[in-house]
Length: 372
Image (tube, rainbow, N blue to C red; front, side, top):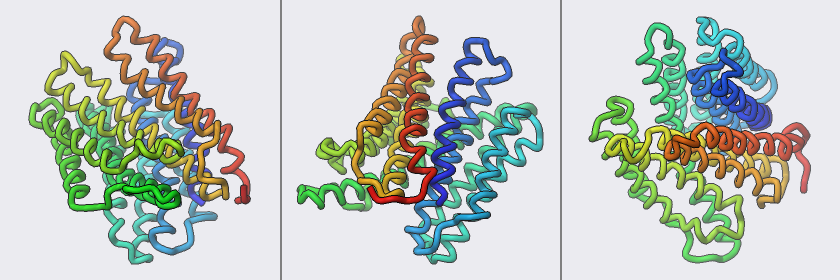
């Protein structure tokens, strides 16, 4: 199944790519640039995890068999070829073609499955993957069109943020409700309602405003509104009642990072002297994206390899490391005198989370399913 190669090698890539960027900051690897760092975190690491998640979720959506064998191998080969090309020749035209082809192929596979399974309600996910592919294409135009490349980065961030709001907003209350029901805990999380749709709409409008006019006050105000809206949505799911099972709690923490990121991004536009832009960006990337992806990777791996749906010591360590790394990274712009030190500390913590995942979950991902 798709989660096996993409979760394992995606985690390995995250663990490798971030130290390469820190080495570049320290002047040790001048061939690695800020643009490479942004691209590989956004389209390299996240591209792999999104693929692994969707290829595993789609059979549940459609009732069809999972994509496996040669088609899965070829799709993974495209992703791996993109990583090699980005290291060897990041500015070459063929690199852009290979790299973008992976997301286009992923969107085509997902679309084929949901259409064949008559699960058209999930077609918007395919559309988001195609938008992500378009954003990736724009980043490969950096040499001739730097402004388009920056737009591509914002589009990529916006798409993944919407995926967190859309899919994270679906699975977090669902898994919480199931966990509470088994323990006869009441009241349960609020059921899906028009409020959820309103929050998604507000979030989409805010992110679209930011894509179009990233420095405009209306965009900042919309982002702040979206942050508070997502915080209100999160509180309806009663995550504070799940602390007996960290595997569930971490989903609420990951969604909380999304709300904080939107608030910080909006504040960085409205009051840039108080809220650095980098704090909001990294609350979104290191925080919301990092925590939510690891939360889903650990849960999906445990569920699909026959392990108990409970967080063991290794899993709790992974969650602690990624959250600490994100917190230090968000704090670093507020302490310019200690910025480089905090940057190194945050990268070490965040990377160690993925090293720990590869060590603890690699054996589960690389072997046949067994019961616990």
